[in-house]
Amino acid sequence: MPLKLAHRMENLGTETAFEVLAKARKLEAQGKNIVHLEIGEPDFPTPPNIVEAAQKAIRDGFTHYTPAGGLMPARQAVADWIRRTYEVDVQPEQVVMVPGSKNVLLFTILALIDEGTEAIVPDPGYPIYESLVTMAGGKAVPIALRERNDFRLDVEELKSKITPRTRLIVINAPHNPTGGVLSHKDLEAIAELAQRHDLYVLSDEVYGQITYDGHHASILSVPGMVDRTIYSDGLSKAYAMCGWRLGFAVAPLPLAQRMETLMINSSSCAAAFTQMAAIEALSSPQSDRAVEAMVTEFKRRRDVVVARLNAIPGVRCHKPLGAFYVFPNITGTGQNERELADRMLYEGGVAVLPGTSFGEMGKGFIRLSYANSVEQIEEGVRRMRGVLEKIAATA
Image (tube, rainbow, N blue to C red):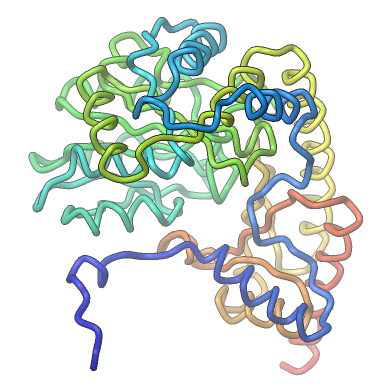
């Protein structure tokens, strides 16, 4: 008998990076060599001091349920880190520990978006934003991020997107998929609009510690925005802890309390021993040094991949200022981004993502992750060049 699914399942999207990874793994199982430039996961080990803290926590009995919002020492560690990093005072009760920062996105949207309301989301942007807004019954309104503006949103255009139905503005900096950042002036302008129109801002800053040419600015630090910002972060990217599944939110207290209720109705709590490891990650100078070393290496890889891509005829690659992605423009090749991404995988043995996986403004672009070795990056770009030369020769 046919499965009768709820209507919301028809509106639920996916994340192409994992779909392409699955295709690549299937090809590898058939004996094909694949260069992985599709998945956004640091290829570094978790710093050993964090691993040791988790092991000690397990030995010490941190293997049971915690309060839904998290262990108070872990919440305090996040509040202290926010204070040191952004010079903003938040209370530990405003912190919610979650099993992966996607839960912050889900809980925020479930708490704020009703049928018929709107959320403004970046385009190109992380596809889960639009997916969750639509699933919740709202309308995702795209705000274009253009190459000519360094993939920053245009504040005047943002103004035109706000309607009486708008409830939420979603921002992401450093940005996936482009590596773009927002200036403090940009954040002040967004904050002014949020305050004028009584809106909340969901600020996804999971790549906030991975910047190359200046300190990351958070909208939390703009006066008046602590009460309007849902700050989303986690340990996956900066501390190479993707598989640990630990994120955190900083939110206005009434919303943080609602997030705790949503946690009780879904995952109960984040794992206790990972929360103890988070205290070490966020508090130890040894962790800070590990992050600095990783960012230094990412910057080296960025410079390599940008230079190699810009040397390919028909390809133009903007230099990102954060995260570990490049978003090269391939319109000069005359190829469709989805068809080209498929040919790169099946003919070239290099896994990349089509830009339209991140929205309509990704048309004419592809995304590469440089969370891989320089040797693999150079080999992947060499294979890309080979596919494009083959296409040109048969045109």
